[in-house]
Length: 105
Image 1: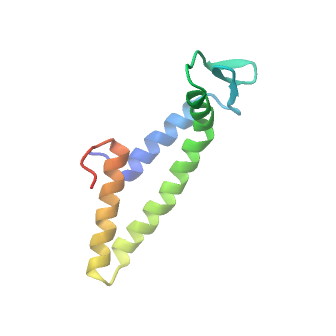
Image 2: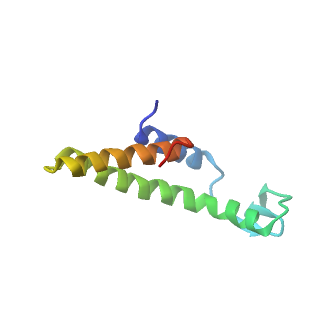
């Protein structure tokens, strides 16, 4: 089972491999400059979500890395056993979410 860092690395690699540039909503699709990235969406919300994913996904990965490092540091350095257990549980829940598992409490 991959750890959180490996999962975040994979997600970041997928984002890095996507078409570079500013993704924009364009009618029923998404464009970068003159190039169509995706088209024929039925709902404006889907167009907006896709267009914003280009910037939102890397931002979320960066934020997750900061939070994971903070919780891992709490787990390692906690003098309070309960705090260490809470940190470990939090990391486990975050990993389950990123893996798409349904067993998250």
